[in-house]
Length: 344
Ligand code: PHE
Image 1 (cartoon, rainbow, N blue to C red):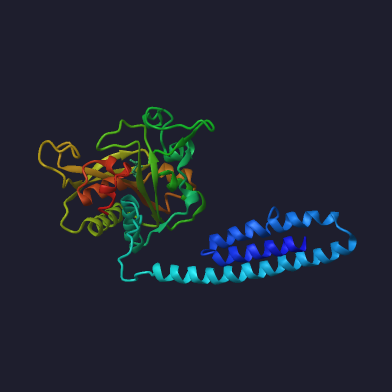
Image 2: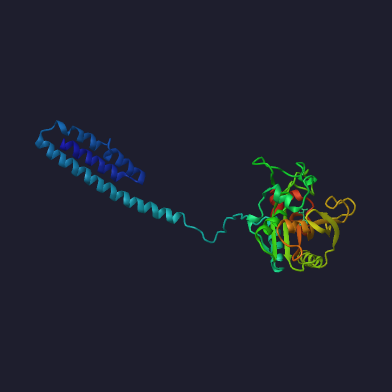
C-alpha cells in the first residue's frame, strides 16, 4: 500500500508540474485531494491492515496528503499572482477616456414656479403655512361651509368636486382656500401666509383645463388692511413675476368668502389673434381670484371684524407658468414628455 501511495504522490506531482493555469491546479486538487480523490480512496482500505501497518501506512498517507497540499498551495499562489499581474497589465484604466453620461432628474416646472412665487412672497413678508393647515384630502366643512358657501352652492355638486368614499363629506379639495380657515382656527392676527398645493376638479380635460392643478392661496389679516393693500401686494407680485412691462387688469368678481371680490387677468402671449385656444381669442387669461375677507368668514373663525380686516387671494400655478413661458397646453405639465420637461 505504501508503494501505491508513493505512486499516487508521484503521479500527482507530475500532474502538478504540468499544470499551466489556476484551473489546471484546481483539477489536480480535485483528482487527488478531494473527498472522492485518489488519496482518500486508498485511506478507505486502511481498515483491512494490521494495527502495526495501519499506523505506518496511515502516517505515510497523511504525510503524502500534507506535502501535496503544501505543493498545490504554493503553485496556486504563484499562478494567482501571475494571472493577477497579467490582468492588471491588460486591464489598465485609461483615465483620459471621456466619462459615461448619467442623466440627472431635475425640479419639475410646476415646482419651480411654486418655488419662484414662494420666494417673491417671502420678500413681501409672507410665510408658508404648515402642511397641516393645507391638506389635499379635505372636508366639506373646510373646503366650503366655513368659507360661507351656501348649502346648495353648485360648486359643492358632485359634478364639480371629487368626493371620496372614506367617509361622508370628505373630498379632494377643489381649492386651497380651506387653508385660510385652518390658519385662522389656530393663529391670532396679524396673519400673513401663503399655502401652495394641488387641487382637484371634475373637469373635461382640454388644453386649458386639467382635473387637477395647483394653486397658491394667500391670506393677510391685520388692523387697517384695505383694498389698497390688496392691490398694492398683487401689483407688486405681478411686477416681480412677469416684469413691469406685462399688461394686467383687475376685474370685479364674486366669491362667497370675499367681499368685494376681484379677478386679475394677464395679457395672453400665446395669442395669435382670433383663433388662440388658450385665451379663446379674448387676449386675456385669468390667473387669480382675490378679495377682502368676508365679514361672515372672519366671524365664523372668531376674528372680530370691527378690529381686523384682511384680504385673501388664490392663484393658478399652471396658468402663471403658461403665461411666463408661452406654453399653450396645460396637459404638457403632466404628460412626462422629456422633450418638454428638459426645457426647464
Ligand atoms: N379659491 C378661489 C378659486 O379657486 C380663488 C380665491 C382665493 C378667491 C382667495 C378669493 C380669495 O377660484
